[in-house]
Image (cartoon, rainbow, N blue to C red; front, side, top):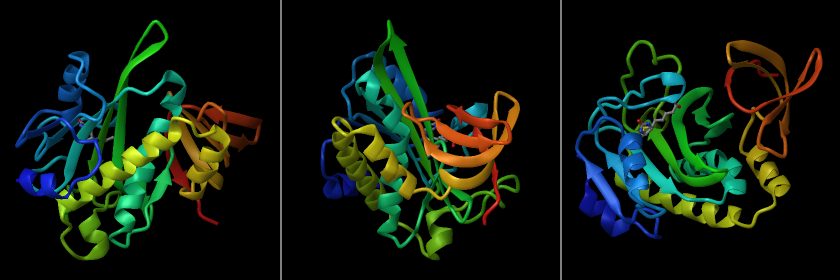
Amino acid sequence: MFRVTEFGKIRAGNFGTPFFYYEQCDSTNVIAEKLARQDCPEGTIVLANEQTAGKGRKGNEWFSPPDKNLYFSIILRPEMDRLKYIPYIACLSVIRAVLESGIYGDLKWPNDVVVNERKLCGFLVQTAIEEQELQFAVVGCGINVNTTEFPESLRSIATSVALETGRAEDRERLLASVLLELEKLYEKIKTAEWEEFAREVEEASSYIRDCPVKVIQDGRTIEGTTQGLDALGGLKLLTAKGEETVYAGEVLSCRRK
Ligand code: BTN
């Protein structure tokens, strides 16, 4: 069980008010989306101790056993032109929070945090846009915290805070830290220039510049070397046919130099 009272004592800032806690639910993103449609305020958090139908990107299921990890969704209502910053501040907030435990997270485009190429955290950002206006964004975050045994299919590609540090992590402390970092970054991007922000993102990522990658987008594989982020938040690639920018997709492989 997640210790809600403990969390209440150590949390700071406004993100996490109101706070909805479920011992078990299907998906915190589904619940947060309903709350957002009922006008729940920015900063609302839905946290579950266990998800029975945790949603990952590309229709994948997110591994969500009880008592181990963090599964939460936050409601944000940014201006439309700030939307491109959101996946990146989400990753940066986790990278900063786990650094307090001595873990060097790497931002893997578009919105994963990996450690030595194994996934520590993933985000699922869902938006509602009406007449070119952003109604809300639900940012769903899954952080592998204390799982030490993954199912066979994930064993070689996933990691957790506990596996990286060799000790159990306090989920309440980690959540408080992620939310505080996220809130600080969210304030910052309200006025931040994209170019400067993009440089900060690139510094947090070994994938975004000068990295040979394969990106799979709509079933098509694009091979190239990364050239940084473009003005819309896409990943620029130098391919054999010239420059190409991808706005969605998955980095399949990265051959380290
Ligand atoms: C990914 O595939 O990398 C995205 C994973 C996102 C998982 C989180 S867990 C909390 C929130 N609720 C969900 O159903 N999904 C997100």
